Length: 301
Image 1 (cartoon, one colour):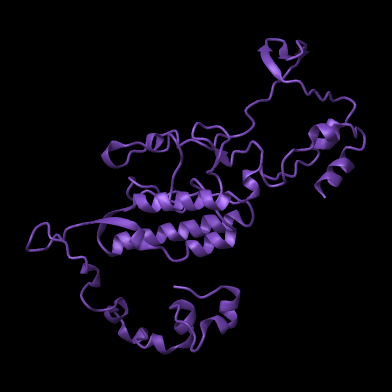
Image 2: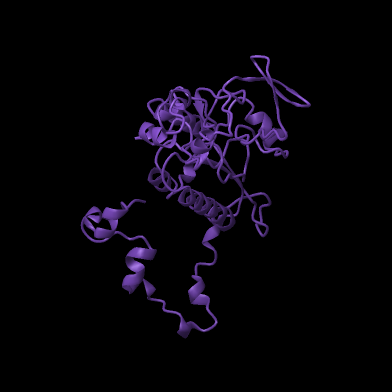
């Protein structure tokens, strides 16, 4: 299908097909439509030069055959550098910078955190893009995960949370195992893959190890046990420095019970159908997997 499409668009210069046909499977590199590109190469006023550029001169570029090609404009650096940490300094525990932490490889946990950097989460971090499906949904799901973490920090009086090194190691191992049998490891030069030195290599650091749906389900219910926590001491505690990790229970009353106008609040809300399944996540009686809603999206904790 891909070859037929290319040949149809190169009808004016069919000899170009053998030169342009990729030697790797579709999907190894990012699939881009490129509307009009092949047609433009076939125009009579376009020179399709295959020789590599050896140097740039004031008048133009010199190719490996020694010929100078005079030009008015040279367009270069038309991509982006996706293998480096952010250009600004980000320091974690013991002053370690993210640039140093990722100098060999951008190791991470579920694309959104890395060890030694407390309270630091990523959007579209390493292994955070997608080879198929909706990237927007993945971004929104990551945002929801981070929001749950922020709420946990606030509710439970947590000073900091940091992903454990062992879980970063495990996720990295999972990524390598998953990608080993995929098209992304075909023989191509792709920004999806890195070798630790910024070049295309054996590690897929650009893509989520699975489908879009897989990512949504994986981030649906955070595994809080994968993190280490530091708690804030209770300011009113008689024993200074003592932390009661159950302080989030508050005063034993719900906010709706303390409303200024109690008559406007339904204290038996849990009896209404709208709260029994959709909002509270309580499974239906019997086998949840037999419910029509959960056949579309499996019920899980």
